[in-house]
Image 1 (tube, rainbow, N blue to C red):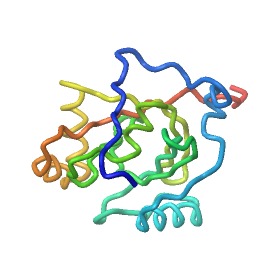
Image 2 (image 1 turned 180 degrees about the vertical axis):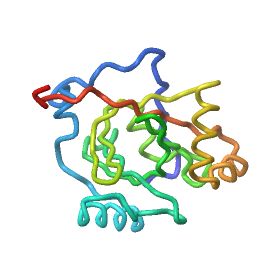
Image 3 (image 1 turned 45 degrees about the vertical axis):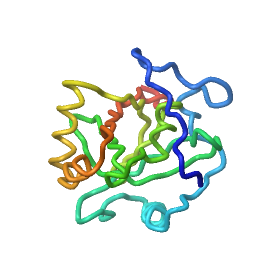
Image 4 (image 1 turned 135 degrees about the vertical axis):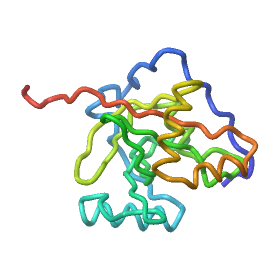
Length: 178
């Protein structure tokens, strides 16, 4: 793993189009080879969620998590990462805190590059489009995030970077016959 961060693409002003190529269809956006995390605690959380079929009871510091599934920007492989559960009206926030480290977590660049993700909350799984939020909208979601997981405030204090917040907006369900 490199010690210097790769340049992170800047988000577009408008929502990004759906990914093109073999995964341009949102329903098929996350097919492919799964590569487990190099982090033991992430692997353990993902294995528990996979084994039990739910994120219920999978916590960080007694706070609930959800499971984020996305395509790795460098490898193109499917990646899975538990993130804190920050939900409001069916939308979720993914806070790229990395515990207040000087760099963003690896998943941040992946979501900017390919914003179609799958999120599992409890036993419910659906697809979302991630977009980074700024200014007033970021402040609103940041407050929700700190309410859900107060350590985020400490993480921001200990780093010089502004911790990114991405909002996950649900995609329309497809193939349901409705």
